[in-house]
Length: 198
Image 1 (tube, rainbow, N blue to C red):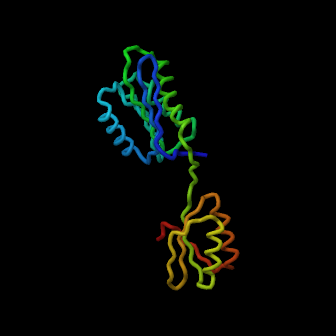
Image 2 (cartoon, rainbow, N blue to C red):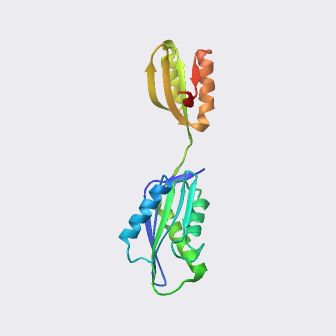
Image 3 (cartoon, rainbow, N blue to C red):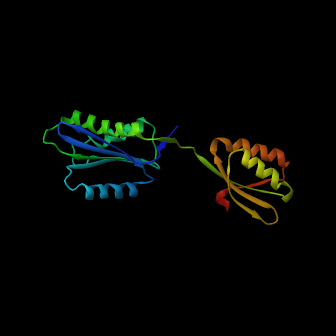
């Protein structure tokens, strides 16, 4: 099950005099990630590299920022993928210590700094939501409200017109059983609208 992280977490590694300052944080999209990376470059003008990896909303990125190709961004991205994360940006600011680490050493350093930061991160399961809209006669309002509440759904809106229209969202995995329960309890008097029809 995909997960994201609660808040930004930092970790610093010192390897052969090079400092690797890692941060993992929640991130919605690539534009937000690029803004954070630009801020890091401004905050760390003496850093040799600001490498980053992103998994967010179907967008991914692996940026080496001048390190040999495939030695920074890709290993960082692999750590995010291996832990089944979504909506997460990993950044590593490197201050060069004067001793070359070689390709294998760089891969380990970037992957380890992100993995160590993730050890301290609080992870949250991502539960896919479904948005539903139904209408029911006034006499059934209480029944529909009770079913929505017992399913753990969030009631977003209620409109009172000819009928009572309910707009709510709940875990995708619970949606079908709620629809069946409401249809059975309503004896065909509950109608459903696709959200895109609104």
